Image (tube, rainbow, N blue to C red; front, side, top):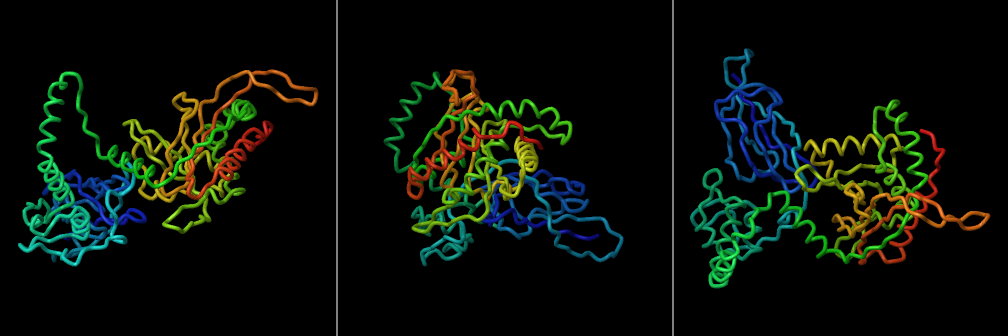
Length: 427
C-alpha cells in the first residue's frame, strides 16, 4: 500500500489560501484518477481538487469551512500498489478545475498585513490564530479575551475566518439591540409583501468589488455614436465561409477588441494602474471581456497579450473563454491580470450604460446594441440621408489619472477605427 498526500495547489498570482467548502467524497470511499474530491473557494475563483491517482480516501486533514494555505496537505489517499509491502507516503501535486468565479479579497493578503504586537499566534487558552484571523481581529478591534470566547470549528478547534466573522456580526447585532428591535417590528408588519433572498457568495464578492471600485476611482463616463455599417455588412458577408473554414463563429466582440488594442497602442496611458501616488504603465495589453453567467452573476475572463493575436486568434480566444465561462470551467489565472475591460451591453438590447471600472484598471469600454437608424451621409456630391447601422459606445475612466482629453481622444480613436473598417477585408 502507498499513501498519497493531496496538497492544496497554487492557483494563480495573489492567491495564498483557500476555504474548503465541501467534501465530494467520504472517508473510506473509492476515488478514480482525476475525480473531484474537494470543492474549494478563494477570493477570486471557486475550484475543485482532483485525485492524482485511483485509491481510497483515508483521511481529510481539515474540516469544511477551514482556511488552508497553498501547499498544505488537505487529504490522504491510500492507493493500490505492488511495488512494496511497506507503506510509504508520497506528496503528489494535484490539478484544479475551476467551477465558478472571481473577485476582490474581503481582507488584505499576507503582503499587506500589519499586526498589533499583542496579536500573538495563540490566545491565552492556547487556541491557534492564523495570520488572516489575527489581521481581521486587529482590524475589527477584537481582543484576545474575546477571541478566547469563540469556539473554533477548524481542525484542533482552530478559529477560522468564518468563526471570527460570525462572532463580529453577532457582537455588532447585540450592540444595536434597541435599534434592531424597532426595525424587526417594521419588517414583520411587511413580511407578507416581500421575500427575503440571501446573496450567494459570488454575489457578495461582486457587490464588494463594485463598491470598492466606486470608492477608489473618480468615475467619469463619456459617450460617442459610431457608424458600424461597414462592419455589419462585412460580417454578414464572411460569417458562413469563416465558420466552414475555421469551425468558429465570428461575432462583433473580436472586432471591437482589435480596434481597442490598436487605440491602446496609440494612447498607452489608458493601459495603466494606480497605487498610492505611483502610476504603473503596463507593457502587455490584456483585454478583459465581461460575461454574464447563467446564474445571473458576472465574470471577466482575460485575453492575455491580445495585441499579439490576429482576427482569427482573437475569435478563437473569445469563443473559448466565453464557452468555458458559461460552463464554469475557467482557470484562476484566466480571470486575472486584465489591463482594460470591454463589456457588451448590446447583448441584452441596451443602447448604452455607465459601466463601473474593473479595479485595478483605470478604464472600461461598453458597447451598446447596433440599431438601424436614418443618418446624414457626407459625400463629395453633398450630404444625403440613408439607413445606417449605428451603435453608442460609452467609456468610464478614472479621473484621478485619465483626464477628459485623454479619455475623449481614446474613445474617438476607437470610433474612427470601427467606422473606417475595410468592408473588403479578407481573412
